[in-house]
Length: 153
Image (tube, rainbow, N blue to C red):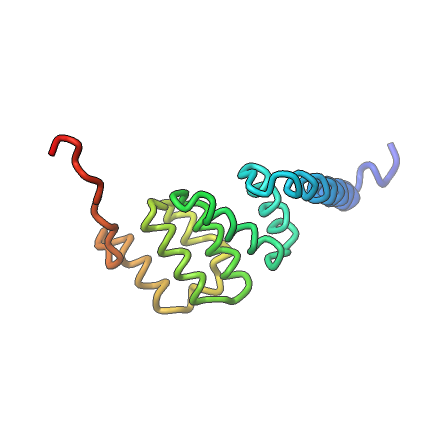
């Protein structure tokens, strides 16, 4: 066995290179699909995730916005939008999207608390208030009551 095959650094570099090549292939492939079908939710999610993995948040942001417009009920799409805004230091927009996510049912607060994407928000008093609301179970941003008409009425 050669020294390079045993070297853990070499193995890591090779793996990262392969991942990068795979992401580049997927970005190109998915772009072609989105040209033909711009509302394909699965492809939009994959494309946004690939851009995020590369740290290309300016490219993932419009995809995240499109996902929230196509499927506004999906809390995770709002959460991902908050992450993109946060990474771009668009703090007010990030909090707006984060509140939308929570109002639509996002409740993975253990992940939210440690998510590196939200680091730019952590020094803001709104983040502290949000965590305090979660820990005390008192919501300052009440969910809207169900306003659907009761079919029995």
